[in-house]
Length: 148
Image 1: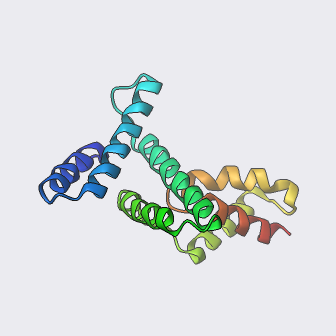
Image 2 (image 1 turned 90 degrees about the vertical axis):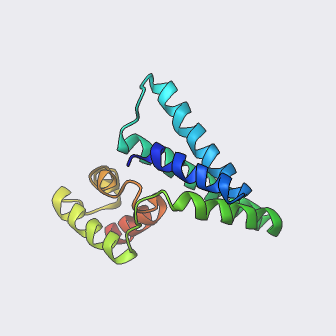
C-alpha cells in the first residue's frame, strides 16, 4: 500500500472516530503530497519523493516547536507536538545514534575524508542512505565530530 492509499484509509478512520486533529494533519499531508506532484508534473510521486515531502513536513514542525518553546507558548508547542507525532507515524523507522555513527564511519572510510573540508564529500555519500531515516542535523553533528 503506497503512502497516499494509507493516508486515505487513515483519513476515513479518523472521520469515523471523529479525531479532528488527526484528520486535519492527514489532509495537510495529502495536500503537501499532491502539491509536490503538481509541481513536478507527475501523476504519481516515487517513494523517495514522498519521503522528501514527509521529511520537509517533519522539519517544519520541529522548527515551529523550537520557536514556540523559545517564546514560551506551551499551548501552541503542545499542538505542534501532537501534529509531529501523527506525521512521524508515516515516516520510516528512525536510525539510532549508534547506527548513524556506524554509517558515518563507513562513509568517511569510503570517501577517504580526513578534515572538515571533506565534510561535503561525506555528507553527499551519506545522505542518500539515511534520507528520512535520520535527522540531517544529527548526521551533520556526528560527521563534524569525526572529522575534527
